[in-house]
Image 1 (cartoon, each protein chain N blue to C red):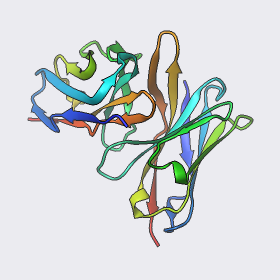
Image 2: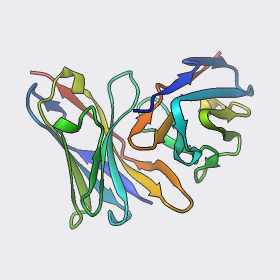
Image 3: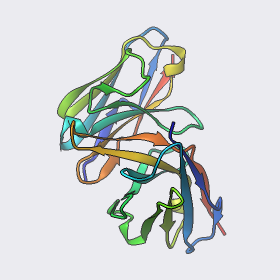
Length: 107
Length: 122
């Protein structure tokens, strides 16, 4: 099973600041098989990025994804109030796994 | 717009079988993969397994011995059975559409249900 480790666990930032979230895989993952989700309290996760860097439909361009192999990054260029949430990375090579999540909270 | 809705008991007794159904509207269940994912209160996401509309399945190895996912294309629904439940199976259960695209290659979940909380307790 591929383990995804997300860091940091919590990111405390102010609106307008840049957020950089990391997702590290225990073994190489094709970038095609790496996705990012946003989850707000009481809601289902929402797809942000698939294929490591392709924004899903309707996702603002302040969200960007990058990376390859075992290291992937989600960047939010300028935090808006609605961006404070928990973010998960996910892979599917032979079995689906999710990272433990990074909470982006208001500083 | 595809919409998914989970339904089923909110309370299940230990050692019994948890059964949930996901109803798909706004689109056909055909030609897609459909997954169950759960989230214990205050914790992260765990994939349970998926079913292709044709009936082929793939389960999380850690749950495989207890999981059965089935599909009813005539009703545009798919279902989850999880047997021998314990308190550790208490979670919000989500159904989701899983995209497994060959060209260009991509794999992700694009539509999710709102989730349903299932509590395992006597």
